[in-house]
Length: 190
Ligand SMILES: Nc1nc2c(ncn2[C@@H]2O[C@H](COP(=O)(O)OP(=O)(O)OP(=O)(O)O)[C@@H](O)[C@H]2O)c(=O)[nH]1
Image 1 (cartoon, rainbow, N blue to C red):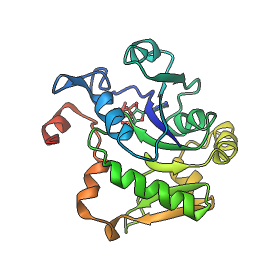
Image 2: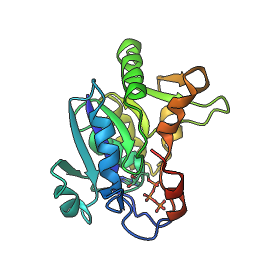
Image 3: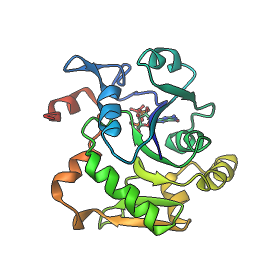
């Protein structure tokens, strides 16, 4: 299972390159990568960048693939799945819980489904904290071709397995935390 870190966004709300913004002396994206590396079921890490930031991200020493489409997370996942099955996270998620990631990957492996995604009781999904099979790539490719960029629709119209977030340890929920604006940094206690 590849650990794919999406890093091709424009970070408009943050106002500058948020993934290389240093938190406790370390670029934000490295916090996500190191948490992902602590998962026992992730074999290798790949950063899914844009052609604009790939060079800078390569200096971190991890594999970087370029998302040529950049139409949102859907094209990041489409790109990652060219390499194999992937657990996908956002590079702006510094509080990932490795045990939670392992839990989802196990559910994915046992379910035989092409995607396994955490779901809140109101139906909201967490697709940037989910496991995807390489077979899902064709579905995403067709949707992208048709201009349908909503991941939620791609997942819910497929044979997905859903993980009831509220039935799991509450302390795992911090795993979904992501940095959008500068002020989000003050919530970063971990
Ligand atoms: N590869 C890839 N990654 C993306 C794309 N869009 C967003 N991401 C990444 O997905 C994660 C979540 O993105 P968002 O916070 O929703 O978007 P963003 O572009 O980073 O920020 P805003 O411009 O403020 O919306 C971030 O780590 C982004 O770098 C894309 O088109 N391709």
